Length: 301
Length: 313
Image 1: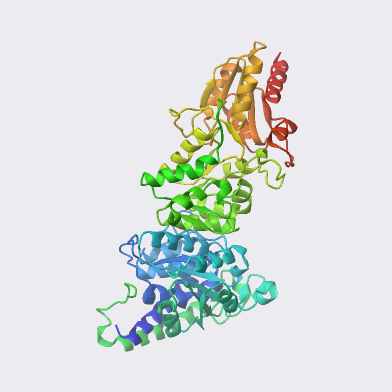
Image 2 (image 1 turned 90 degrees about the vertical axis):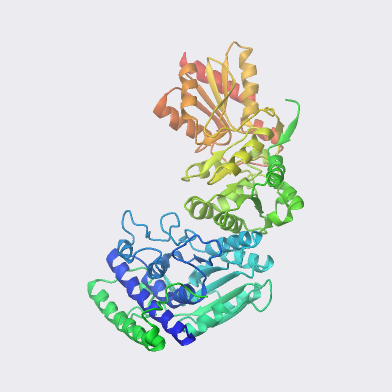
């Protein structure tokens, strides 16, 4: 696949994921649309452009691991896993319902493709570090990608883990901060200002990269490049917009954990449907006549 | 019974043995490896030891990640920090995730001594016992502690193994095998059941000796597995004796006494007295002084048994 086609395919998956996120949260009647939508491009880039993984073999030992530390953004992960083929898309409509494998927050014991259960904030990076230690002991080249929210960075354990990874030279851990600037009670800077996230991570010993978290080209570059220095883990601060893709949700903290009503859902799906159509068109143009035979569902290199 | 060793000494030694046997154990500690004895593993196999610094939440999270990838992690630290400080990590990451993490904190109970109430963990059994999937073991001596660590290493899922700082008599011999969910009858009797765990097993045995002189034949049970609780075995003893004294170096709220009371309430209601710390924090002092101060000696247990039997008459 050409680079342009890869970018177009990731964008198309992200557009589909956003549509799925709103559809499943509306069906559930509750959930977290804001932080799911902000992370869609990051997660799509990981699953279709960066991570080595195989939905047909979820336990393949050398797969790259993904840890969703901001577990409330479960819908973005479910949309990616369904899109990649870990389970059928019909499961998406069971989100948050009794008996569903798609719990309100990711449950590794119930759902295939999830590496670890998350939901209580601030715990994912420590788990990712532990996974990385074990992989290194076993000579396994797999990498561990951990997606954190910026509000989540207020949890002390995040910084305990941020200290740990450089100290132990875990250069196969990649921390990605979905930096949308909002948390439940408002702007992160108003609720509890952390200061400059990138500077803080750098001070803790990480190689820090900053990029537009909705620019697939930039995300691909940031996520794909190996660390500049051996033994130094990479953190990516991806600047995003909470609620990205739905006009009335964008930049509004009120959409952190609320389901849209029927009218709002219709509006959101109309907007997201239009973007999805454009993304599909762009993908078709980029791939050209190869489209039908080269469905980009098997992950990256 | 002459030899005395702390149960914590079992941790580092057993982990080194397990590595030699090819078991994929690792240790994660939070700057207390000398006290918890995981330093022994660090010395013998530095590649299998990870220090997180003074960061117990991260200790549990890191251990969880190691478990996700198939290692068998044991965590150190003191009981007060491993449970209270990192409770949410133990609950949501380890237990909710059903992960194969073994918490083996040391310095539980008042026998920590002079460090005082801030460091004397008296609520850990209660905290760990309510967590789904968590198994709670309180070994009575060094031999039982080694066996508990081996059992935990060989059994998938989360474990809490409560270890102590102070040297206590070695009760068991090499033949001892730790059985999950089983009570051990250390002394048969007919008048009263003394159900004890951890360092209180020694005190319960002393109480039984004292009572024997008065013609009271006490049955002594070592309840080393608080969860799963050997409820039927305890009920069978209670039906036989008709009176139960629980003995724990822990708050009487939520620990062994509560667990036994819950079980007997359903299976065999009999008069019961809980010997333990009575809803107060600990205080500085030498271990033996503290045992007397908080009413946890053999004499205190014997007195509780007498009181219980007098109530019945």
